[in-house]
Image 1: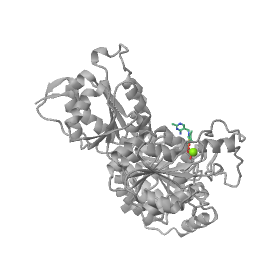
Image 2: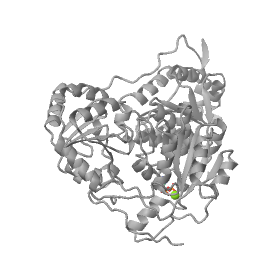
Image 3: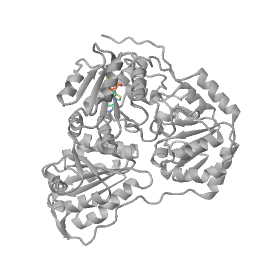
Length: 561
Ligand SMILES: Cc1ncc(C[n+]2csc(CCOP(=O)(O)OP(=O)(O)O)c2C)c(N)n1
Ligand SMILES: [Mg+2]
């Protein structure tokens, strides 16, 4: 058959099983949009390319499969960069297809020409500048293979406009690109690892995004229960084990409960699965788990020894590795260690003041969770609200919690929630956001209204860049520099202006009744929740300090009027 490069792209995307693409058209990708018109793929018109990138991330994070976004050349491509970089740091399989100026104009500073290939080298797993339509036959399946293989991540395919329009003769389309078989780990290491775990007196599991990417939750639970090993999670590992599981000991690091960080101090073997020892998790890395031998399993060999030298480092898919390990693990009650766990938890629990009050941070989070149930998906933006959710939301399953961990991108929450809702239309998606973060991609409220997605934006509105204000209060002598908003927008009016229903829990009605009503109604809505500006996230490890040196609440704040 005779086919254009653009139709080849949409045909290959269909073969990859891509049902939805987010993007924005422009001069350099018009042929691609023309081909999309004739394709079965649903296109979601974002209102900013960063929004499109995060919508695709929301689809990928919620489904575990690669997702696609489109942008035009020049500003379309540069607007996508943040979402691509975010996908790199959090290992999200994202395939971005950008338009480029025609081949003959590359290098001439043509209208909307930018070196997308060059710009995306450091923030992708791999990228391509396609030089002929026939190359697409290899490049598109390969892009999906790379995005999904090993440690997932973003791939960029930059396609000049004339390549999109080029007609070629194609007999058959190639098979879809699929992930390469993962590394399995060496068998001699397996015996060694089993001995280490069986002989440990105070072992602790630390799980991260890799456990969720590998879909290893079930094996994780079996290992923990068989050998009585408590499980701590990084920010991106939350949900790997249900919050209520007796062996789950919460999130580690900067905003962990004190007992969790104390367990890390005392453990003698740390079984670290699919984690990368990010500084927000470890605190001062040299003093992280000072008494422990570290057994580190990761699909990406470059993580082994990057931050913490493991006693035993294993390059393997954690799901396969756990499956092979389980028969070698001796069932063991470990009474002493679990007694110590309960004692520390009793002495230094996570304090959640105001958990009953829907107008306080922990209260709005707990009430929302109770109303939407375990089936809901939860996204967040970045700031205090993100940390309160991470601390207090009772996550019940993998892929329930979507947040920007590594890059910490304000503006992630709303578009990621739209993506999650597109991937799982039967679920409610709750987006906890802040008054700073929401404004960074607020235009996506229009996309939410257009797509009628079941996205509930819960805005913890403190009139501040709260996490910045908290650091200025605690570490910069209370000198508040550019962390307070003097103009406070009417977010309910803004939402309504975009065609999104809005509720204000600070109004006259009963806040709980209003919240229930907002969460029950179909389609998108925004719930404005006034939060006292003085609220801080505690405990907190000062940046650069060891995790044991946590600051607790109690310091009261004087926020200047
Ligand atoms: C794009 C981007 N710019 C700046 C920052 C730095 N930053 C981290 S948290 C934060 C404040 C966020 O404010 P808000 O969304 O209102 O959340 P709050 O902390 O008040 O809950 C800022 C500015 C960031 N993470 N991302
Ligand atoms: Mg705020």
